[in-house]
Image (cartoon, rainbow, N blue to C red; front, side, top):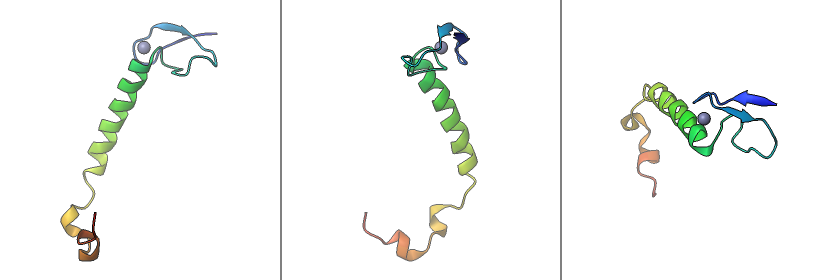
Length: 62
Ligand SMILES: [Zn+2]
């Protein structure tokens, strides 16, 4: 079965030996996951600032 890499649209074989499927390579997989992570960072950046955490959490040892 031949599929297109969602990132670069290169045709690749879909097989259980391709651990990057549906991507053609680790590079494309990481780029796609990175784009997703950036997007979710923008969403989570609207959450409360660390200053709004209770004091017992802020003073806890690292
Ligand atoms: Zn690709």
